[in-house]
Image (cartoon, rainbow, N blue to C red; front, side, top):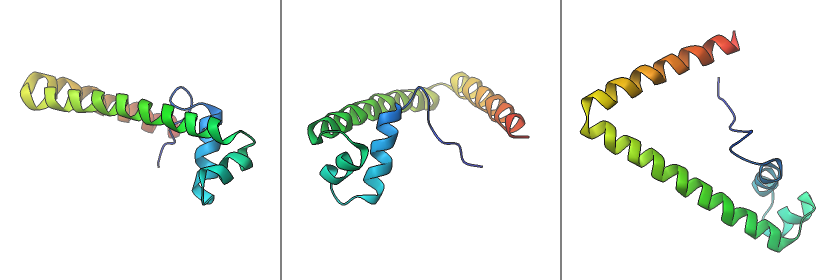
Length: 92
């Protein structure tokens, strides 16, 4: 079962804009559907890109550490497996 990233990752207005962008041809049309100004939509997209890049840098850093250190790999893999098991229990 796929999980949807919501809550602390994206604001409700960012989620609405992304949903509107999926079905709109332009940012301007998406902004109209959501009820915000075009400049606001572009500002939101700029912030979303910055959030993504920040998260991507962190993921790349963790992956680099895993490649360098076997102990980090074991700890992260163990914790990830525990988290996946907890998530599976939440869906039962």
